[in-house]
Length: 427
Image (tube, rainbow, N blue to C red; front, side):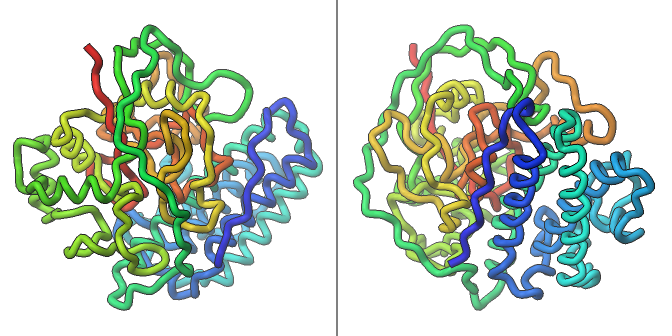
């Protein structure tokens, strides 16, 4: 059973030293290779849709990130590993030059998987040498930690993208052996009142955060209650059975158009019988008590309307998550599928399992300033037409998440482990 090595949590920048940073670097880089280890070379080349990328592209792009943003800027007379790799493995940094078109990444049979492993080894050696020599420089250390968090984002994409690719195969192959869920008693769906008022959200302090999590600022949070757990497959089945996909009154206009254009009738990976779903362990019985996943924002919003509720705002979920337990439903446990909600906490599964869609558009916080230079393209330029998700998923590294973390996807996206947590206003 493949299990990704657990990467150490990013320490405060002021505490980073060359030894700690080198260990953290090695752990994160090894975790990416561990996720690719169960895959044949043929698996790592295919691209199943424009939104997804081949595994070997993820492994190469994260390596290019360190080469381009760290080594080329900090090692005198550095010579790139290959003159064409910057074109092949740049993702969307226009200030870094031209790039290979994203929908065509699956056509890159060369460089081979072995050649890209050699590329990783070469860049890792350069990086570890640089860390040993200058890892105590705060600005350089912060840049390397950014690169490691960037790689952890791609670790999640490795999992979700290969799941989508394997699901297209009529043989429905498995990435790993099945792992049984622990016996649990499902708690009835209840709504738990949460604090309201003018409260701070956003990241503050010296520990790592992406620029889009800043600055911390005050927001008005109205009286509200959050569901005690995510919506389950069984509860979503009831929505499907009640003609949820054929009732226009439940859907946003764009959602209704998307549903009809794409012929949606159920969540991604569900069999039409509603009894099984495709997982990274191959087809498995659909567990009615596990969180529903692989639903779009449109589906989550329609379900909430059908249930007489709404989706939470990102501020509501951030405040609720501040003191919540991280749990163990992460990529680190090697299960690669959300587990049932467990425990006695008033709000279960705020972290891990499935990303919670919010009703918050992805936009800049008041006073937001992008990173300087090309790294300013990392988050800021995507602050349009996307929706915020919170909490992490079973494909997220545990050390990567925090209460202020802002994920974002287009409202039609379904291939990530995205789910539903309801909210209600309190009069």
